[in-house]
Length: 147
Image 1 (tube, rainbow, N blue to C red):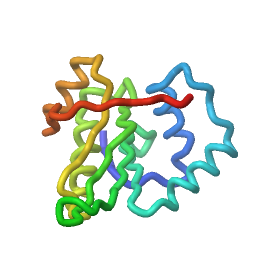
Image 2 (cartoon, rainbow, N blue to C red; image 1 turned 90 degrees about the vertical axis):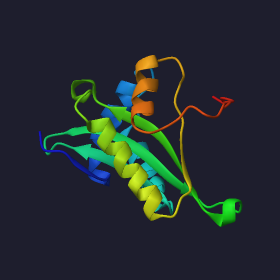
Image 3 (cartoon, rainbow, N blue to C red; image 1 turned 135 degrees about the vertical axis):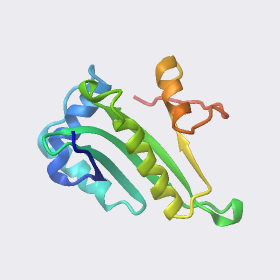
């Protein structure tokens, strides 16, 4: 399976939405116009890159990367990684590892001193995967959902 890791483009929206539906199957689907407008907002954000794993036939996975400027640590930025999704039929084939490798490369190229990855704690296999990709569970986080 040829696999290309690249920045997402607007024409990738149907594939991205399908991946997000796998991650959150209970969410109502976005209508096409709302998705397009939201994508345009995302694409315009400086320092934000949504990566996709493209098999030439379909999107196998995605990761959302945001570089945040900081005034601490000698003003070195950090990267926040969210929405790591690999389609069920492509799991355990190196797709997630390739996406995270590219995300870390982008962070390094931007001069980031660390990469934050947020994940739910409930799945030991997911936690083992992130550890195998070089991430360490060294911080505790909190969430406050507004909706």
